[in-house]
Image (cartoon, rainbow, N blue to C red):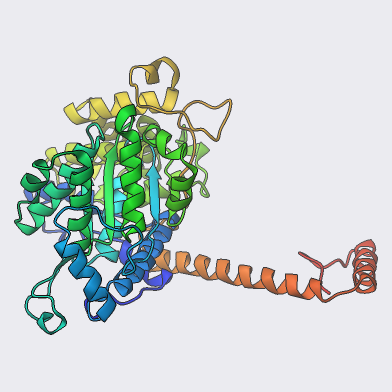
Length: 471
């Protein structure tokens, strides 16, 4: 389809996911007021992780497959589109021929670990055009007008009943298109008809990906309607609409209890976001730690001229944050705001600024949350939505690292190049492993015994080659 973005390799996705909102907007002559305003741009900053690149690649594949299956210039798909347009809210036949069966994805993790930031960055790259209005260009195909919506994102932070879900979806479309679908769905006699109408509307506008963000621990816990909501997810995917669920780990309990849905949601992936493991002091800094890489990368976002004793500043903010990406970022922004408020030139963040960041109206809340994340136990019991890391025993809540962040360092091109090289090494390793399997499969018992004897003989004289046996 001419309106689809060009296919991007993993290397291209890495380059495009990285985003520095300060690039070209900050200079030595920038005033304190200008720098203060630029601080608010931190929400758009993004350094790609391996998990973000994987999600972007899979969603790119999903949207291309969905659009290929819905090309309105193909005759049998014109008939299917007309059936949808004329259904007037009646249930639509399952497994419509014009649509491929889509998959789904789950993004789960506590607050502040980067779920929404990752979704925003991936959407910016994979879905660069939100609306395509064909106007009258499709009249010769029997379609007067088609307004195409690539993806739809909604916040579902209230009780996840079918009515809530239906009105949230139509409300997002109404805001985007200027339509009045919500009023029409609200007049439906029952929730089955409402859901059928919502499905028809989504398919009519060719929505390929539906993102349900901000699922909380009780969002999908209404027992008498939970089955209906899960059934709606299944219907969406059966008709070619990929469903992306993002939220608190406890919000996925019902989904996890349904093997069919879990299989469908695994088609794009189950992405778990974990809090980092903060280092207690600069001497404990582990250069290979993903958390250390994240914190250093986040400190690229800098409107001040300098940071005095940067390693100590970062260690202080890291400890206060409790391993939460979002909380670390808030505290780092507060430290810069304090430094700028002195109106000295050049401006510089000090260790005292980092400590004082936890005392501002924003920093006080961040510190409380960071303490609960870091210590767990009684501190965490103050909040009913803090979960311990399920993969670690005998360790306090939250002590786990995220998936790898690209190598630290302000030199963006080199960092991007390093991650691209790592991606290429992974691909070659897989090819080498596959080739080794083929080689071993061709060997007989005598070949294997001879190779093993040669390896042992070499080892005895200290000449054994490094790595795997070489046949």
